[in-house]
Image (cartoon, rainbow, N blue to C red):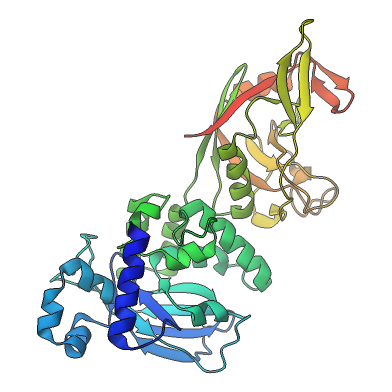
Length: 410
């Protein structure tokens, strides 16, 4: 319903302006922001501005349509029209990444009442969107507090990552915050670029008060450090329950630091991949590991029947995210290839600094993506289990067959 309405209104805007969708932006925070300045610059050269425009205000639409037609719309419809901006810089490289920056203007729905307010609030700060030149040319993209959150997540390491690495992380982060806004059958960064706070609120997966707090901080012109802290809250943390046969361990994902790894892990959780899994490796004073062996039941002699599960594609190693393999942290297992992790993960029972990125023994490191918030005695109990060797699995297999019964979102 939300998406169809958005498309209908978008087409109405196009018809009323007599313009194509090309390079059409919508500036928003809590609501549409009219009178805001929009600039486009190369992603890593933000001062090299190649295009500037100003978003439309209610008065702009009155001047365009006339007062009578403007008044014929309800406050919700007029709110959607406010904030529209058309900007198509010359010599835009379709393959390059650009930084779209919005600043100033007035938020015409500061209290998120989903209608054009008679008391708009002046915006003191600026906010951003990362987009490819082709995506800008395609049009219909937003500069919102949600795009600002993902920009802040990338900002500190833009000089380290290639454009492809930035895109991969943006796509992963999108899976953590929105649903399939464009109804394409998959969730990626384009869903964030299309997400409209007024029209698509039902597609937001995170904490809406955290998103409003970020919008309010931008409106108030708070310092960059405070904006980043609030952006971190928008990315949030997902609580996940791991129910073993000896008790439950609750973990919290670290979405800000490890978006690719968390999105990968949560996709396995949602699919039920980890249910009825064997803890196939346990070493006391080290870690417990799972994600490989599915328990099928027992035979007539009481012997455990099992099979190895086929995981999905490997993911990029995010071990350089600054997180350490300390007691209670969850990390991805992998082969000697740093970018080979799939579904297997382990819980560190002790501090294992030798697994950290940059360590002398493992310079590529093992990617931490979550932390235990309750249930470490369960981990200790499993790690202390007597172990054996099992053909087809390996060494250090708990002899009695420790079962991970289910993994679920909380």
